[in-house]
Structure formats: C-alpha cells, structure tokens
Image (cartoon, rainbow, N blue to C red; front, side, top):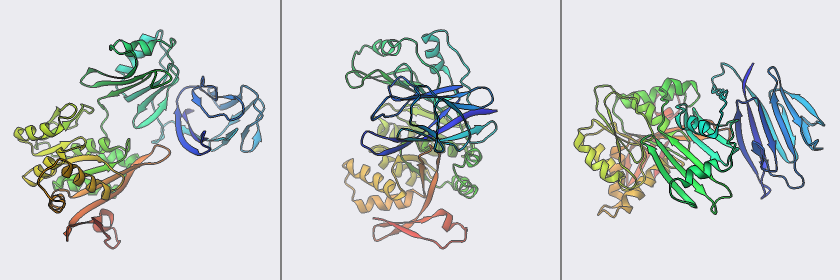
Length: 425
C-alpha cells in the first residue's frame, strides 16, 4: 500500500520559463488546476483546466474533471480517467508532472499521516500550533496549508472553512494591513502579511525544532557519506572550529544540532540565538535568546558563563569578530552557520561583516584571524527535488601572502586523491 505520492512538477511560468517544484501528498486526493481554487495552481495561457489525482485504497487514478483535450499520460490522451503508475509522465497543457510513489518503510518517504479531521477552524488552528512534528507551517489563504515535516514541505489536505478566520487571527494583533509579527511563547513565532501588500492573508508559523538527527541518521537520509560523517565526528572530538555554509533551507541548523550532539557531555556549551528555534541536544547546553539586533552584545556577555565551546546559530553582523576572538582565546571547537553559496564566499562574508563593523583592523589581519580560527567550512546545498546534502567540506590549511589556503577534506584525509588547494583572496 502506498503511504504517499510525490509529484515533480515542471511548470511553465508567465514569463515562458520553466520552474521545478516538488509536492508530497499524504491525503487520498489532490486537485490540480488553473483557476486558483485547487490544491495546486498551474498557470494557464488559454483555458481553465482541473484534474484530480485520487487514491482508491489500492491504486492511484487521475480524473479529467473538465474533459480537457490536453491531458496525456506518457503521450496517451486521457479523456475521462486513467490509473497512474510510478514514473508516469503526466502532461497537462504546457506542464509536465513526473509521478513518484513513496512506499511504506522507504527511508525517503514522508511518514506523516494527515488522518486528522477537524470539526471547526479553531480546532484546526490549535492543531497547527501544537503539532510538534511540524517545524514550520505556511498558510497561503484558507485552502492551502503547507507543513514542514522532517525537512520536507508537504501540502496538507486541510482547509479553513471560513475565509475570514486567518485574517481575524492576524488583525487581533492590532494591525489591519501590511506586515504583522508576534510571538505566542518562546518557541512559537508568527509572521503574517495582510492586503494590500498581498492578495489575501498569508501566515507563517515557525516553531522551535523538536527533532534532532544524529550524524548516523543524516547519513541514512543521504545528507552525507559515511566518510564525511566520520570526518565531522573526528573534527568535533579534536575541537576543530566549524563554519557551516549554505543557502536558505539547506539544513544548516539541522547539521549544527547534530554536531552539538557529538560534543562530549562534560564540556559546557553556550548557544546564542537571535530567536529561539531549536531544542539543543546536549546535557550541558545553555541557550541564550538575544533578540533582534543584540547578538553581538549577547556573545560578549555569554563568554562570562565559562563556555568550553561557543555556538552561534547564525552569523549576520558584527558578532563575527567576537566569534573569531573567542575561538582564538581558548574556545576551540566552537561552531556557527552563515548564508553563503560556497566555502570561498562564506569566509569572504565573515571578512566583510567584520570590516563593516568599523574596527581599526585591516583585511589582512582579518584573514590571518580567520585562518587561525576556522578549521572546517561545510557547504550545504538543496536540489530541485528538495533533497538536502553536504556538497563539500573544505579544511583551512594556512595562509600565504594574505591568501587563505583550503583543501577538500575528502582529498586531504586519505581517500586516494591528490590534495587540491584553493585560494581565498
């Protein structure tokens, strides 16, 4: 029996360019169409269309609800309905959908069951707030509710019955238009947008992450190879300071939590977060919520708490300098994350953030500190299907003529390939 279905959609946009997206569905039915009322909206350039993909308890079917003359499976015209199979290619007008079944027990399959049914909008709202399995909830109007479950963004089958329910929740915070932000407790933060900046009310619920994966579990999820997992364990044990780099939603905090779990239990870990987003898996961890714009001050103050290691959930500003100073003054093995698209860019960003602070320090001096403080730069990526993984681990090997030298860990640590050095200018 199938536990879910994955739809890999190649969609032609209004600019006549293709974009790729993946939707995982655990409900028994999902509608796809072009008039804005379906679960999945696709752009239509000539006429409206609507199809339904439905599970009957045994097989998946596609139903041509409007008898569109442009619905095909593997090139075959579908006038009314047809059974669909794994790897089928569905063509709807100018959109292609690749079907992937996710079997029960599959490591890559989402195992969340959307079996809940709610008697009222208030009951659904309470469930979205309280469900610990969701790291984030995205509400795009009353009929589209996405949930972030174990790193996968899933379209739920749930809908609010009243179009006014979500707007009323937002307006209760005292604003009637534009951006609205508020906090229910330390682990629940909400960001909303009201017309006229959007067509209809949108709401994001961010939660302190409950799930923590070990490096072995990340390895099982193809986040990294066994060799890279071993290298990271050894690096944490040797108290090498680590910088995790990647774009949005590439798994930076996920990996950071896993690495903190590897820190010996007798070492005191102080964690600084702008906003509390995570339950940290360490018995000797102290989490400090700095608030927006106060990370730099919190980093300075927390050094008085006698940390063995300092963890900054994300470096965004002048705290980059204090982080390097801490590492170079007895807090080896500290870790942080940064938004960057490559190891080279990650180090350059830290240099830029430090220089922007206005300290009387030269770029050459900053690079010297970087080369002494940071030992590993771990680069993460997320592909079009939503899969996250480590794309590269670079070791800082030294500095020469104000140029930071780096080598690929897989090539430096005995995997049979000659060392390749890269320069960070």
